[in-house]
Amino acid sequence: MLKRRQSRHILNSIPTVIYQLAVTDKGFPTQWVSDSVKKILGYEVEEALAPDWWISCLHPDDKEAAVKKTSILMTEGHSVQEYRFRSKDGYYLWIQDEASLMRDTDGRPKEIVGYWTNVTERKQAEERAAESSTLDIGEEELTRLNNRIAVHVVAGTLIIGSGPLFLREEARLMWGVSVLGLTAFALGCSLVLYLLLRALNLDERSRHILTSIPTVIYELKATAKGFPTQWVSDSVKKILGYEVEEALAPDWWIGCLHPDDKETAVKKTAILMAEGHLVQEYRFRSKDGHYLWMRDEASFLRDARGRPKEIVGFWTNITERKQAEQRAAQAHKEELKRGELIRSSDRNIAIAALIAALIIGSLWWGINPVGVTLFVACCSLGLLLIWLVFKSGKY
View 1 (cartoon, one colour):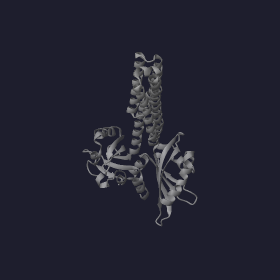
View 2 (cartoon, one colour):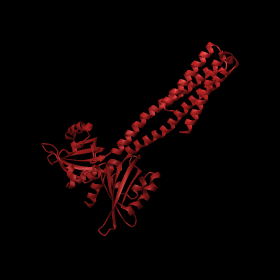
View 3 (cartoon, one colour):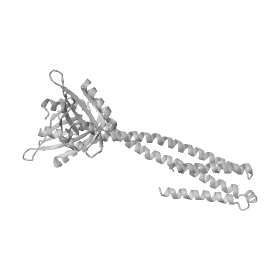
View 4 (tube, one colour):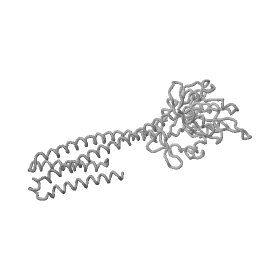
């Protein structure tokens, strides 16, 4: 088991603010807050113990919902919520608040034990991904609209331009009943009909804390032959799916590292030995075979003579944050791609307008080799543009 000094070091080092509230007839006064409130939120413990400190730091838009969640905690014994909370420097952080109701031997509410975890990075990544997704919808539709405009301009011009040129009196004299003109006219009408149809288809307390927080706490012994695992918190079962006995097996940690992260993670041990503290992130295989992103923070504890004695650290599951960051990065790439598509569709409109002008302009040449050649060339360009738009899938 962990000694008192180790427990205090852990509770004040993990990226979580642990708190204890008393349950009274008049409310829930704060009884205790871990020292990590200073590291994470910037407040001294004495400030966090002041009456109404918590409610006064809630974001105005989240306050009502956060207070109402207390009733869920009292009836169900457990609650998890996320809200914005003002740090000491005035900025709002996203906090995940998980609390449990502790009862006495008679089953009466005794106290509330919970913890706050800073999830601002995950929330920001999710917001970036959501914003890009919203832009995706608008820009995608704008691209399709521009391309439809370009196609309709060309199609309409083919209809308008082919009729007067090949069905006029001179054309009949040259071609008889103008099969070419009728064919072009029919193709144009068919194209418009197709576009229309396509458009329609569119310690009791300490034990509870150590097993409930979203963190696996571990202790390694520093020996000449390595760092055998001495102790792992029960939360390893909840977070990674392994029994404590499995996590204590030799080479369990290194055997579960992702192959692409293993070499780097092992090499970073030198930093821990040299600096006494190490934070790294890597993928770790859970019991069900899936890889989770873990944040590993470890510290060296030394004996009275300053010699390395043991390593105490913790793993935090940051998979959601990593996935949100990956979605945001992918959304950024898609945004750049969409920007190019929009520019392309804008060019299509300009080209369509130019082709339309050339088709209409070719009428002035009359029925002669120059006029017919110009007309056919412009019609070919127009059909080519339509084909390219459909090929892109952005109609």
